[in-house]
Image (cartoon, rainbow, N blue to C red; front, side, top):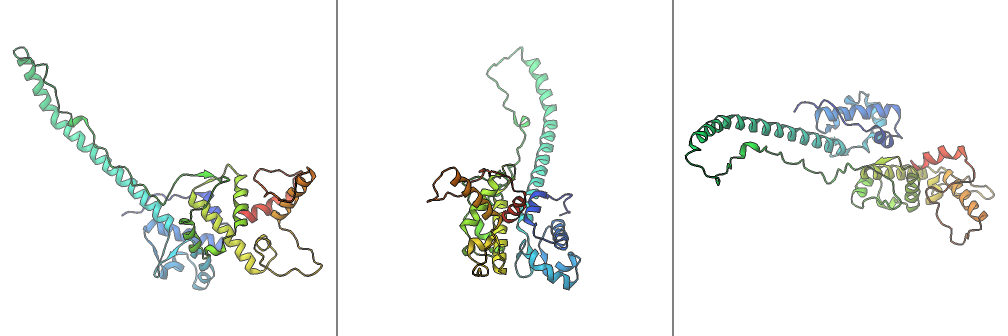
Length: 305
């Protein structure tokens, strides 16, 4: 089949999924998915470096970062999203082709029956005065009907519905486990606090609409970054939540992360309003602070994305 004239690229989704890639990794990834779309089939592993236009040494440095977007079947790299998009485009093309053939056949049948109808009309005009039968009804309606092509097959695993984050959103237990496995992390790495912060952060951005799969992938990427930071031993937001990282020296004050600083500010506001602190309530989306701290906004965005 000939190469398709265009490729669907959702810029906002692409940037959200590849925010951690370097410039070189961006270029290599785009070249790989462009080739995948043009050929319409998985990429052999022996051709990855050549398609990405990198030397073997440079390819080894970017391979791990790009591998999380593909499925390695042993000899080839497969891309689930592109496979689904290709299937949808091919199905739409086949549907249009079938509709065109059905329309042509209907026009052909109509032309073939028009002379017969004219002759019937002339004979009826001559014989009508001698024999009239009001019960005779023309049942030849085949030429007035157009064949309707079958509807496009619906893909249960590729919902195109985009929606904003809600306070009761949950990742699918079936698909999210697959996303975690593809990204090299397991269900045991799931942290409820990280999930609640992720959901609360995006609830405050109602203009950002994504599919269920994109929300799950963004959550998995957020968890993976926090897990890497915790394993690296840095004093990050992931360490404050999971307990990972170097132990704090006696007398040394731990530097709070951006999210912890926001929560501390919210707790102080509640105490000032006289609200009880015995059972602290979590910071909810939309709750405002007494003052705007511009130093926090960029850090919060970076940690929760």
